[in-house]
Image 1 (cartoon, rainbow over the protein chains, first blue to last red):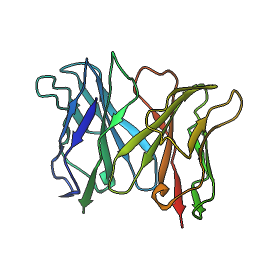
Image 2 (cartoon, rainbow over the protein chains, first blue to last red):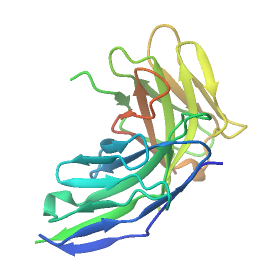
Image 3 (spheres, each protein chain N blue to C red):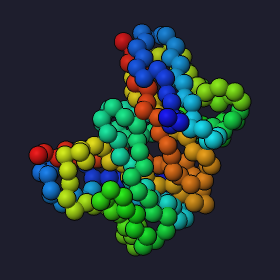
Length: 113
Length: 114
């Protein structure tokens, strides 16, 4: 079945550092890919998405590119802030099969001043 | 605020009691999903419902767990005879249609079983 693998956390960075959180997926067909963010004590919020190969999703300085050849959707940000500290979830929703989103385990990001 | 509303936010139960978690989807949304988040684990799908119908319950434990989304009122996730392993955060999400994968989440209900 469909699955998502994320790098394990926590990822600890200093403010203004470059961020990469790796995400790879396994799916049948051509899924849509998502990054969600969960701030402490809150529910998940959609951060960005990409619906087809080579699409780049972006929001709030975060970017991720849908790489079909490597089945990856890595999250990047050029300069993180303390307020970016949260848990980030990669997810997919499979066209041609179940549309129920499958989530990765989440990667905790801690940004120090 | 017309977001997804979950209640209670925190629920404490003793082993053997029943837990009922409620979810009101965003206005105009007719698709509801329940996920469970265990410590050190990701978000695990439990059940997907539309009004008066269970569409997919492949993630629901076969016993003690049930869900409904009646024509009127919130969706309810019911856990009977709770055990300590049921302690988790339960998230409800909604969407206006079922085929996009883009979900709107509530803040979750945190169940603690003593």
